[in-house]
Image (tube, rainbow, N blue to C red; front, side, top):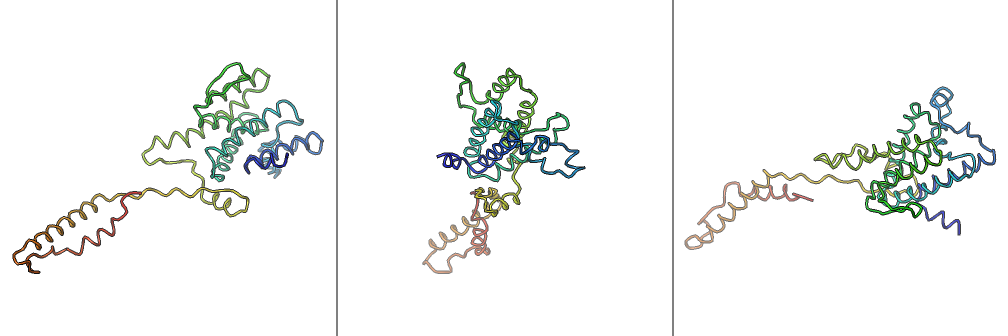
Length: 280
């Protein structure tokens, strides 16, 4: 039963959840020390401890505490909702979003003084989910209701009341807002719908051919450009040919030489072939 429940999660959420559970269990059993997991640019660059780039995102506490359960709930609920919702069938795009968010948090780490970034990453996903589902109504402990865009702020206030560091959640909100603006808002502000955070093709090819079960959406093809000048030339040539045919049919005696088509009578056929596709 438990195995079926875990397998019901999409692949990225399932992998992240398993990593977080295993890391916490290893720390609780003292198999691993949190000091070997935290992120530090000095240790990564000077000591070559590159595993810290990943392990810090899987640490949510050295024991199965109430705070750990809250973060696991956020991970299961909102990471899964994103992967099955707006990123459905776009596993590569979802992984690219997590990669960009993680890189931004790593770059901000020296400024914020944070060494474990998993909480901020999950809060980033909560923020993006909330902005992409603006009309969902929610309830907080049955006390009051609100729409989804207010969810990050409600959780921030609740976390602060519990005595947690508000900076962790605020950094996640900030990174999530930057991603949401560049991916969802900015393209609608440009005539060409330019996406600055488009997933590189190499990432899609690696995930598509890596045997990991990832589903990659087909690349969006640009709309064909309409050549209005060529279309007008085609229409004029067709009209001239029709007039010539009508004049020939109405000629005296119906002779074949009563009227002649224009000199460039063969041109319309060629132009028509070049202008067949005018819009998608």
